[in-house]
Amino acid sequence: MKVALVTGAGSGIGRATAIALGEAGYAVVLTGRRLDKLEETKAQIKGKALAVAADIADPASVKALFAKIVETFGRLDVVFNNAGTGAPGTILLEDLTFEQWTAVVNTNITGPFLCTQEAFKIMKAQSPMGGRIINNGSISAYAPRPNSAPYTSTKHAITGLTKSTSLDGRKYNIACGQIDIGNAGTDMTSKMSTGMPQADGELRPEPTMDVRNVANAVVHMASLPLDANVLFMTVMATKMPFVGRG
Image 1 (spheres, rainbow, N blue to C red):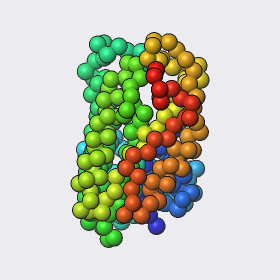
Image 2: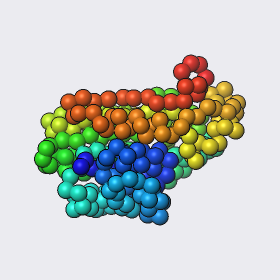
Image 3: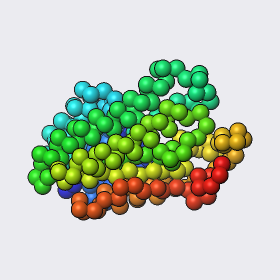
Image 4: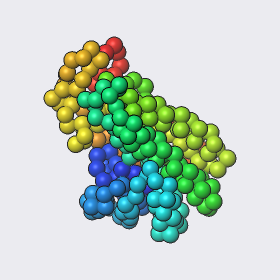
């Protein structure tokens, strides 16, 4: 049985993907800061699942998480670096505090880096050697929304981490890809139906798509043999304002 880790598994894209991975036959490790939310996800998973509360921005917490995975399952085949956060979109760039900036950086780029490091240590030592790491980028890895400097900067950085991981993982048979998601329907995107800030300063409703489309895409990326890789995939609501002038 293959083992998959999903960060930010307590809600939204993480929860939907964890459920889909379970349906695909993976043993699923769920992590996030709130154990109660992870347990809610675990209750919806078919097959083996392990919920471990952890802070991916904390090196000691990450090391303990990966040690628990090895202790429980003996290997790790897939990591979905999904957990992410953003600063409030109502705050102007010049008014962001240092603490707001660092909170986003710590979760969105330092966390995935720490998880990738620990995954490398396991994947290169296990038999058969190798595994797959999938990073949650965003449409923001290509184009920002207004007032989103911390989030957009970290999602651009995720693209660099994906490329470096893909290159440095070759010798260990570790594949790495990135899924860039636009307007998946979750609790976090519920306000899109009433109006989102546009580049011209107006508020307009935006279309969304079923979050299961994202989950199914991640399962597809995860299910490929390790000699094949989806380096970048964009999954988006067809009619969202991304392609074209905004």
